[in-house]
Image (tube, rainbow, N blue to C red; front, side):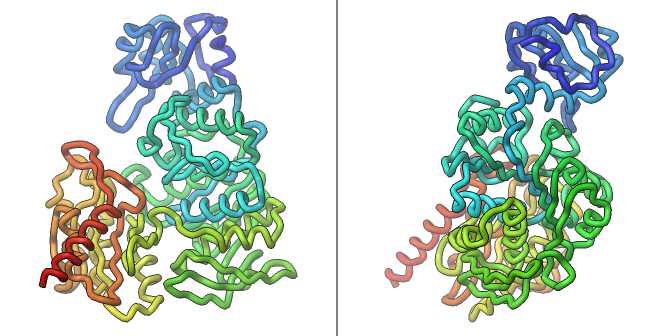
Length: 494
């Protein structure tokens, strides 16, 4: 492909080579460069791709793209652009021949609830017999079939990708979806993806906003910056669906430049829910809009499920999906991986890893009126927002009956230091500390009595743990099963 074709849509400031040059493949990892490839130098939080330009040339790169004028002045065969990250997204989009052009893409953003909302909407569209793709934190699906991708067309492991995959992966996924004649794609869109221009080549058909609370402030620095990143999605979509019970949702509604509809649990919204009934088996409620009132039933528990399902329903209705088909799509969804997922009697795993998500999950379980205690096992991620650790300790100790504080992807930090940070917020004596998460889960199963509810919070769908030794296999489902078997054997022995 000619360099000029690859750079379509990229803001070029200057170039030291002809745009007629033939390029085999783009890359942003100097180790992947081969003969006649183009290397896009990206400045990351930990590494600067401009420092690896020599390696890229040694491995066969024909030219380099950079947004650093000082680098451009030093080397030949270089293109200077306004923004290398934006260039990266457009280059991969162009490499795959603009695969999104004829697909209706629905982007879902917010702090909590993105995955659940995406699964509800995906279930509705599948039930309506649409050809559908899903790109989520949990998995990638094409017409209901799982697709594991890491690196464009190479089939490997989606777990290595983030909530919104990097452009090399993302546009490779879209290319496969186009090949399968996908009509709709439901995708989670993170604030990092919006800030790093990953989705800049995409014109979204619809956008959904769930809520906003403190998260990723190590990256965004403050809530206003975080909000402004999320808001970008509504500047590049045909229509939007917004939770108007959230203060930041109200701001999106007031500043909207697209067609937009609100959802709420009160009447002053386009779609509103009332008559909410909660149980461990799911939720029932009524959804009202225009002159219509629908009875909603879902097997997914938790009051926040009202918002997640309602946002998905509102979006589906605006997409023209038949109401009866939408209702079946909601009611037929059995589980959302790692989201209040029941793995044994009264044992749930959930991805909650922010103070607000913690509070929502614990309140939801308390509203189910368990006859026994609520037991919680949790930790906090390393190399992430440190200020939320004591907040989560405080919430857990106040809202649960028994708390076991442990590890959760400590990464480069020491587990004990993270736990100390959590303990700074703990209020009361209803806790114990077990740094090894496997041992913490086994302890929780050991002390769990009949009618107690056990919540394993933070890791959700993840099947790995990251610590100072790297990334290794770790399945909470497996550990729960082992612990229950051990407990049963011990009880039978005595």
